Length: 160
Image 1: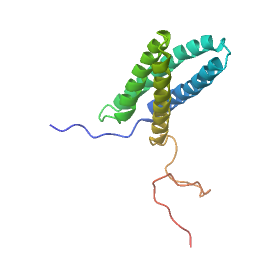
Image 2: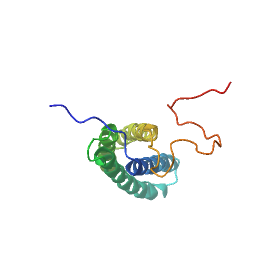
Image 3: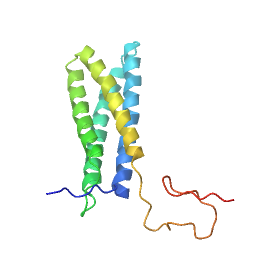
């Protein structure tokens, strides 16, 4: 019994995946700034660090939902599995990181934070590297010859 072929990701769920991955990456980078600010003696940054952690958990859950939609949006074929797997891993890691932070295990919290930010940036690049299908209302060819650039990966004709 063979599994259905992997289909390209549908447009709207992929846009949602890109948006949530970008939001999570921005929040993760903000977390590094707030942690550095706290370590430099600006103790008010710790409260913002906790609030941003909650926002990261919400963004990670949105990214997980987008990963599910990317995987299951095409009814006849399954989409790519990697965004779903990475999103599930990152959501778990964010929750673990929050728990370790509230336990004040700073040595582990810092190491996990570095690994988490690296994983979030890896997932961000992966989300943006998935090809975005053309919109249904956009013609595949340039009807008026205005010189639109070809889609990446398509045939390129050279004028002589």
